[in-house]
Length: 280
Ligand code: NAP
Image (cartoon, rainbow, N blue to C red; front, top):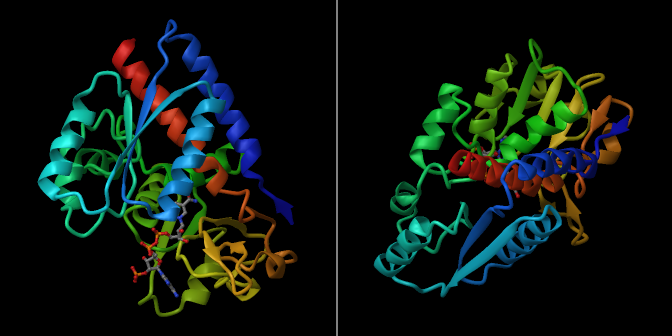
């Protein structure tokens, strides 16, 4: 089985980003990261995204608010961040604390700055197959891994486990745009094993540690593992039991070092695209 490494894909995206930056005439796009509270997952994602932007030669500014901020106060602050012309793109870390009405905040966001595809306009664009909409970075990262490794998608049976708005659903739309035949599975799927085995490309985005073992993987399938979980030994792992599929799958992404490593590279790509739209 071939291991599909995220770092190789990120390096490719970095070249694209740097070529695009040259056309921007010295303008350095700025990413605004908006965090409410001190959730360790958010902090870790913020750190990773900041590191990636630095590496790609892009600017970042973090806006951090207390976890108990009132909805009205946060909405007012968010509107200012959104309107600031220095902020080329925005990454809003979610979920937001309960007192904040997330849907209302999503609607405030300028679609051209919404790099992670969360506002209704971008969701509609992605579902319509309109490339002017930013798709959620993780969903797009899956497609980037396939593209970078020259793995054809057109006409292939793609099975996705998970139907969230962050990964499963938008990914299904991106795969349809690439002319795949898509099956989306979830907790009510009757024959999950059969559906997974039927996939020539299998994408795991359930958030269940090592849930998919060799029994779920068709012969020579290409497996993309989006899951980020912690196993019983406290180690980071995916939704796929990577060791058990070695003789079954033809290629697979590891966790860590697979799809997750590509997500922030896609975020950087979206930031530069937002700048190109604004300045050229
Ligand atoms: P989520 O919102 O919890 O959604 C999980 C989806 O998986 C749901 O649709 C759920 O079905 C389905 N599911 C859960 N258990 C299942 C089971 N036993 N059988 C079949 N389907 C099952 O999670 P998410 O936000 O999409 O994230 C999924 C995973 O990706 C997590 O591990 C997360 O950490 C990771 N992730 C990674 C990145 C990255 O950068 N690589 C970014 C985002 C998320 P129902 O709809 O029926 O409940």
